[in-house]
Length: 235
Image (cartoon, rainbow, N blue to C red; front, side, top):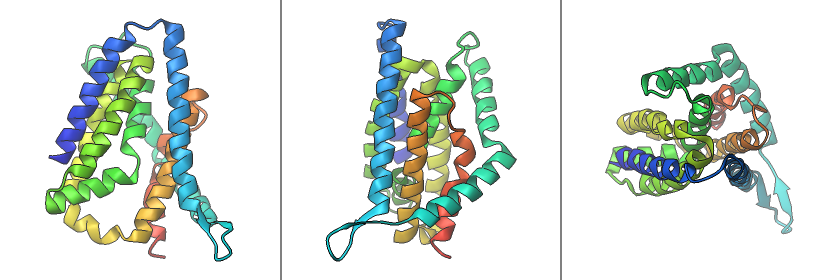
């Protein structure tokens, strides 16, 4: 039920954003997009800092995780570029654009890709899906769905209807994890989740940067960094 609730809340948020967006002038929409980017940027930044900083024995802040970040992103970006995940995301967006009658919307693909990356990346998606698959506890995904609905609502109002279709990758990604929960659970140790959360937060930060300064990062091509972050927890 968790993924179904999450998807439904994203669709609801997107529909509200579509209605609201029609009431805004292009100038207001641009300002709203910058505000959304700033919010996403700080959400990612706070998660990354929470994963990197800790208190030492003398009470001073100690930074860690630097090697994990460098190794994960170097390997992940290399794999992502070779596979061209960014291009595949864009082609999926173009296919959806044509199939859903939005061929005349020039912002559809960018809106779809940006919103999808924002709501798919993060530890809540994986932990919540595993909980749902093993115990039927969908509370984490319901909470994530509420947050996603707010984010997609604002993004849809500023970027367009493409954001609504981020529900599709969320449904596939989280639904797959729920079905494979018993296989994935042993891999999700405390250290693996901490690594995933840290790298995922940096990816969310990159999405926020792209909302403010368009096409600064090919965030989709860095997605494999999350897999390498989990693998490095066992090295």
